[in-house]
Amino acid sequence: MSFASAHNDHLDPEKHSGGSDDPLDTVLLSEGMEAAFLGIGYQFTKPMAVYSKKEALTVLMTQGMTYEEAVEYFDFNVQGAYVGEQTPIYLEDEHE
Image 1 (cartoon, rainbow, N blue to C red):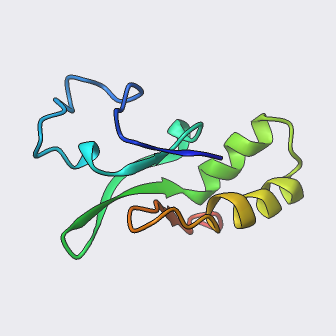
Image 2 (tube, helix red, strand yellow):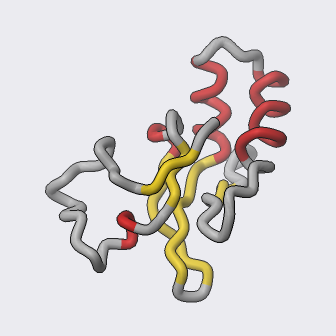
């Protein structure tokens, strides 16, 4: 799983103009996890990308992993990957 600064081609350009005040210009996005993207959250005044863990696991399973493999991969390589202060947040929504 890799992370990229938000030049958000997967988001609707009508909703996100890309201006300098747009928090999407400063957050890191998890590449390949567009279907799990929920939006922007804040840690104090710092914007952070927020993802659904449930949907992230679904994305991994559509790539051929079993549920158990997806959980193991997610825990170590996605949620467990610290990529700096802008590391995305993963909402624990798996057991709603």
